[in-house]
Length: 349
Image (tube, rainbow, N blue to C red; front, side, top):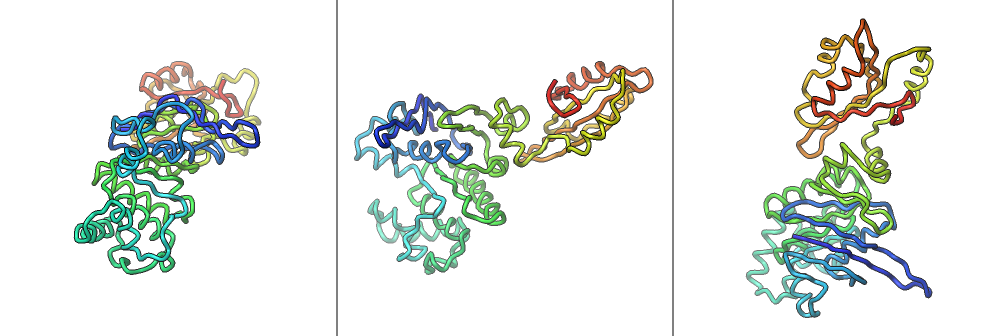
């Protein structure tokens, strides 16, 4: 649905060049929810505004539904933008218009007849759960309700793509959850492709199918959300993941392990990551029974990405009564688990 190739955006500022985006390439499949995450100043908002050409790229191409927006005339671009909805962090509502009038605004611009317009507005307000707020003004709504109006307005022209620029960052956690649930429902009901910009990893975990990590204008990592959480390849991705899924051994346990360490100890500390069905299998008990090792659980957590369970356990494996620790580790690897050997401070060996 969206293919960005070698995208570059350079701003001129006080006689200097500011490189907001540098050689960005990514692909968003039809019907998926694609997240773009990065720190403040990473270029996220610039990237999303380049997708609908609100910002004209310095170089590169942006294809939406097979059409290269970078080569369109202004008239052609206005037509193409009708199929790209957008919602914003600060809602961008018209405060002198009612809820219904805000949603109707894009339809008025498109010269949609009044009867058709009113029917469409009614359908959209029902979709976002605001049918009883049609005659209210934005100033009478909560933050979550304002964003629901923004979503309804963005859907007025039946877009194929919905761009969300930090759509939940101004909302409290409970409201954020309700908006993410609404976006997931809309994605399923309308088969709508959604590109979501955020600096919050829990938003990516909750709603996205795929993700791109943006660092100082460069996509440093991209792939499925599940792959990112279970096998991050960059320090930036690991930092984001650790903000919500902490895999580090707590200091009090590190200290205890250091005190227990003795000369000639043949034990090893490992971190085992598991996904889906393997989370429910009795792997630790099997390990003890098959190889005669002692397994001391140091730390662990379990979570989910959409409907998939994932987690990790940090274990200390000791030989026990003649058991072989290396054989036990090889057994875990043969079960298609990701196994990392750590030192006593929890760092990769």
